[in-house]
Length: 274
Ligand SMILES: Nc1ncnc2c1ncn2[C@@H]1O[C@H](COP(=O)(O)OP(=O)(O)OP(=O)(O)O)[C@@H](O)[C@H]1O
Ligand SMILES: [Mg+2]
Image 1: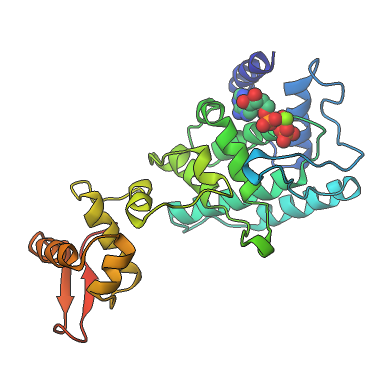
Image 2 (image 1 turned 60 degrees about the vertical axis):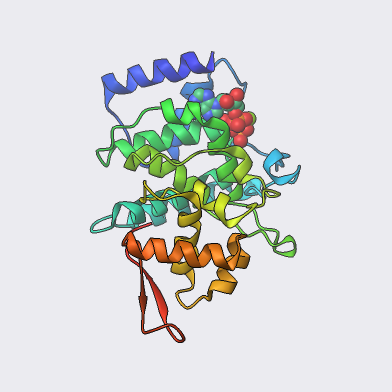
């Protein structure tokens, strides 16, 4: 039923080509998507909500209180209306879109169906910028999209988690920039630990296609800390100092890195984009 509504909606939009950037438009989208599915389609909720999230080990995001929905919506939409995308790089535009999307999603104005109606609203909004987007990537990655929105709105500073839009940005990079980030839910889980520098290097979208994983991990560490010692590198990468020495010599020969200013007080320079 919902998929049918989504499909029907897309067809209708193509015919009508209408869109107004406003909370009323979002409300209307919700109404049209969920008419006959939820009793309160197109109506704001009048009680406070919590939702247990797998990605947070059962904790909830703090959603806007029912009596602040209208004001917070007006505020977020007002801010976005004022914002100019002119001259922004694609990646900065993606960052901003991610921020705006996570902001309006956090309001959660409806009883149910907030994530789906956010997706449809954002698709329509992105179209006004000339992007050719449809619901496909949203539907395929619906759980990832939701989980990334959760992480963009959840702080538990005591446990060391602060809200981050990086997961949502990866989603939008795929959608808008044709990137191929791996959109895996387990990476978003609050308990997910990067098991090693090598593993985390594989998860990054690297431009060094011919590098080995070991080389990639070394490149990342050298970029983070150009004056790192081979001993320190060996510990972080989990290889012997001898291996690190061999690798860094090979990598210099391959033109991936360069050593500046001699052996003692030197610095590493990474020569490729990673
Ligand atoms: N863009 C989408 N297109 C099609 N199906 C979707 C889309 N987004 C979510 N779904 C599906 O809708 C169902 C409900 O999703 P979910 O509960 O995460 O979001 P929601 O109900 O829209 O928002 P919320 O529960 O936060 O109000 C899931 O089965 C999910 O796979
Ligand atoms: Mg739901």
